Length: 585
Image (cartoon, rainbow, N blue to C red):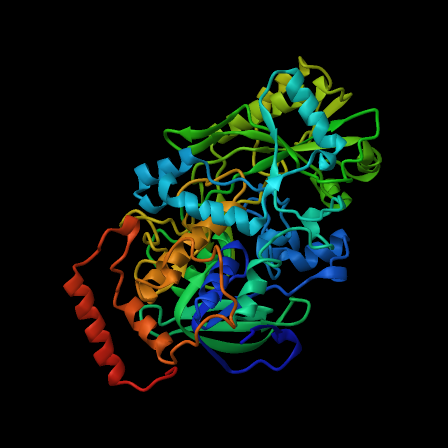
């Protein structure tokens, strides 16, 4: 039975929706979980605050697309306006608006998580199978040379001349036409994002997806049957105009590290770690201006990275150092990043076709917190640490030298006041940058860590299965759980983590010998017509097994209980079922 996408802003919403599993968020974490659970036969409902924007509706116009594809129309920021926090609000989530970069979590980071935080399932030898599956989902490949535009090639030329290590990046595009508007949605659907891969699979397997639905509170989080309070938005997503309740036994929160923590805090769910340990990975743009025409807006905007200064196995933080990546935005976003206005700003934008820009990606230690006031108002508090500022200065200096070596007549660092660098000697002036609050256009596209996975509740907000401490089957399956920066780009680690956590959930809710209990279970999926009909009582049985903690097969195949304990759990679940009627309560 096929599912569907239902836009509740355009029809009368029901008072109540019932499902076995409710997933909040349709991006890399939520979309992946929806697919795997639905294909395993579970009844799945997905809630998405944004709407489904596809095809010709992706107009390539800055104003309209930021309005409809980004949370807060792209205006979300930290409490002091120092960091712009970019988050998707569209069916398919951040995968619709990112630069399509595929960077798995490095082995050094995974070893760091396993050793320092006890995340044994993230150890490279265990997590690798899920990373490989994520790469398959993304149709990951090296960006072909013909799509490396002149702007990215200038970065490569300068780095090569200076003897700096770099690479052409991997991406998840298939059939890219080089339109250059990746950050405001690909109108030809070249990105193999959750909207084009995971969600269609989930729908074919029966998942129901409700758009323009804002989850505002999870009630009864410690009980078997949870209730999610939902407000329905108008077609533009500007106003709330109706309410409904979703009832589900399993709730998976996968709404981004900011919104997931916000929902849990509004619900009073979880421990004191919820909302804390936020990493933003603030990035700073830098622009080389050339005499020749660069046309950085043609072709793939981000295809080359200088990796010389990146550390993937830092003993204290895992991912550290920094990397320099070519990038280009549409005129709207570029103009907002320049510290110039009026006639001066117009003169600068007149050089748009001669600009080659980069982002300086500098991983940070957990330095922020998501807070929610009694009124429900969200605040993102963040303090840029001195070690981040120092590495950022170093990155500015080296990026400027790279562009000058590649032939740039000048390099603009868009701080207040602006810093213009014209010689290698001038580049040393980057060491004087103060980075006081709101003096540099810092961007965060990779928020992580607000419901940290931990083996004990004293150390984090969710356990090793993603279950929020203090709840019964309320989970986080997104970057909220990452204890430190997973990667320079989080799309691949989130998909891989969601695959792993969903696999563990299926192990606990299905027979241990079911193909769905194995990590590679979806390498060759039968169609819905090939699958045997599911027993009508299966959802109830699986729910009780999950609630009772029936997980005889756990990490690395070790038994978490004796065989007799498992038998006892099964007998108890069977007796409970025999005393109850079927169906939802």
